[in-house]
Image (cartoon, rainbow, N blue to C red; front, side, top):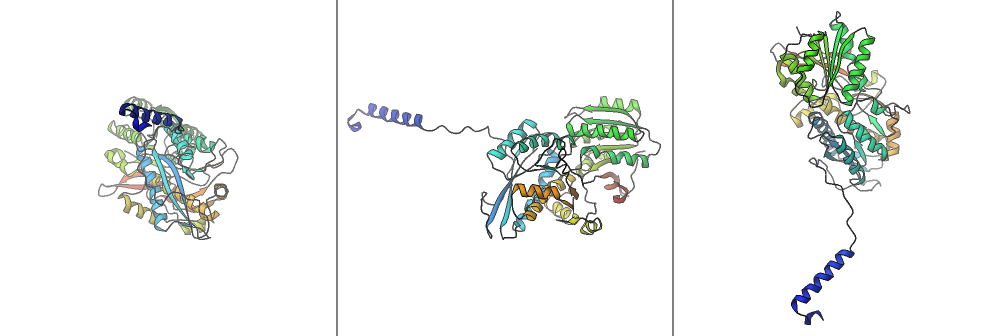
Length: 445
């Protein structure tokens, strides 16, 4: 017996038994390296499969956000909008179905660092490990495309917001739905506006970020401008993260264009606008992507004045139930006034279109859940296919053609410009289309 053995031999025997037992135990399942998690805004208990009347059905909406990296400003606004929607649903006691079931959504997300490879890994994790029910895209067309490849592979329904690249939505996807107006239409309105604002204009210079979204916008803008009789004297791209635009500004100045268009995202667009102003480049129209609609764009000072930006949405838009009735469309959801007031109360800032897109992504899922009286993905997909309605965010309708399935077919851009009031304070005005304008567009003199 062990009790009669010398103490050292007894201890060795016990250790040998422990080693043998450990070796025989099943190996732990392999796991991927932990992702950098964003602060979790999830609410409610763990998901349940309850579906009978009077019970709660918890669902998880998964996505990644660029808390760091080049898209962090726009992505942060998008997340704020989505969180505001979640707060409204939570305050209302959940999404109520006809049989008395209450659907309670929560959010699960990670920091993608604005990197495509992290998006692919994290969306795979969200599906396979976190078991999310529905998905929202990251901000940015390149990141959204990477996410869509994964979600389509696993047959998961995903709403893309902050993503407008045409090519992404022309691959025959079956479960991906685009909220934003396609990129091909982003600068078309500014070219139309140029014809009215500066009738003598003949030359346009385009300088853009070399990412998928900005390049698509630039190439379509060149085609459209040429069709309108303009000469595109420059169409050049710069690397993401560029902070010194001197070489591009020298090329622009050498071509003496009437209008300068392009840009990319917030950081580069703001820097580009400021350097154009500092170097006194003598164009009459300046139109840049993404950055101008952001309220913080005015922090660059006088360089923000007169800059025009295409916007998916602005607080001044007049979408309403009356407008829906006049257009023979259904109306759904929060009013423009209430959304703007709620956002400002929560975040102490005016909402940008990135925030409106985030809120709308949640609201769209809510609408489909209510319409189908459940959370069955196939039923929700069928509902989205036939959707045609007006919301605080504008007209929503999706293509059902096989090649372009899910591509946005209803939403229209508005164009804003920073102007100064009589006191010298910056004011954001809608300058195009004419039916929506709050002020006439102005040129830099």
